[in-house]
Length: 496
Image 1 (cartoon, rainbow, N blue to C red):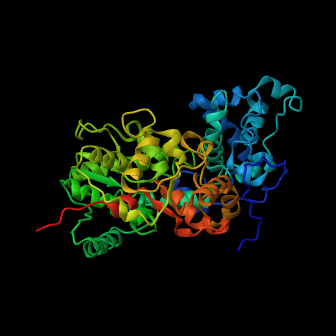
Image 2 (cartoon, rainbow, N blue to C red):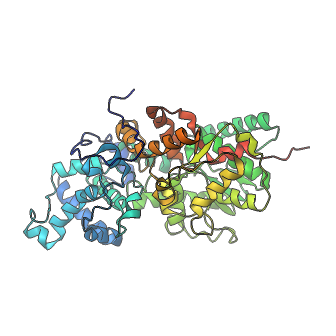
Image 3 (cartoon, rainbow, N blue to C red):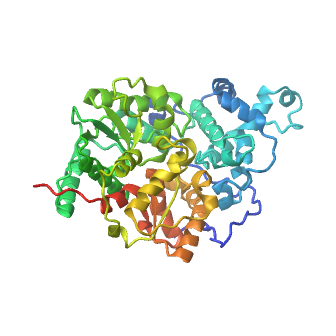
């Protein structure tokens, strides 16, 4: 099944012995010029790329004050070394957070510190060479920017900032990643990561309406480009067709239908995901965010609601207002933006939604906290709402729920292994190995508590687990959407 060694799932977590260079061969495909140019990057490695890279590093540390602090603050205490899922799964020391940071920090010392300029070997400073560039490309694409290391670092150093800065420098010298840049190009020109036409999305939604009516006896609409609707629903494009994503999308529709809220998708902004974040590009992240604002204005909606997607919610929650605002044309009674789980939770608490939990009795569920929701955002108006709200929804719709090991939950959650632009086949080895810590926690609850399914509210996690579960002996349909559970359990009012 695999041409690489799959990590063993031990009963207890084991910190591996160092295997230098274990993943030095792993690298994603390089973007062609036609993928680089539309994003504002050179199509191939520029002649003076060494100096361009050094200058770009200087620009970024001046532009992002957090990066400057992170470059200087590390004291090599070692706390982070066993916190990264990629180190635990690969044993490569460059996949330790401090090891990954050192890739950038060593060049920073050489060109931007006095000690590095005069005594480079003494302080571990390195020249910007082809070897360094290749290391950056390989290892900065073995980071999912999940930020777990920052939770444990006593200084709060965020390795994601290093990966994003490294990728932005790589793009600026003409060595971008094919997968991420191709996705961004489609979203900027067509309106979604998958390049789906508005007609194709409309046809899919029409089929969904027929399926839901046949299954439930209730006509639930899935409208697109409908002017005057109250809510613009922005979802990851995988929700339109992939499994189990689409089952969650059906759940969104049923919730809004039962609550009597008019809503619509937009063919212009048919994408919640924003890969501009993954490559550290402010400009591309902003342009993708502006599509959401334009769609909201064109359709005359009063609220913007995002579907189940981890990094989409991270960008929306943290940056939508500053990147694409103001949103003063929306109804001020609602936050901008809202998450579909917030909408469902509020309706649930007000008694608008009723559930028959027995509809999910064939499953014993656990829940996987998605990194970008857990560590980079919040849900609701209460501290920790990003942890409690999805669990409250699951418990309201299911009778059998079991938590995984506490050291793998909440802000200590382990990444699925494919976020940050790693959801591409040529990185399957690092994806499988990076998923090991989460698979270990799943195996524990499956063996000890009979867990059969894992719920999740992130499109990338769902796609990753669908692929990865079989490598570890689980069924690919073990992963389900949170709103898939809602969809099965919700009691819809019958129409006359």
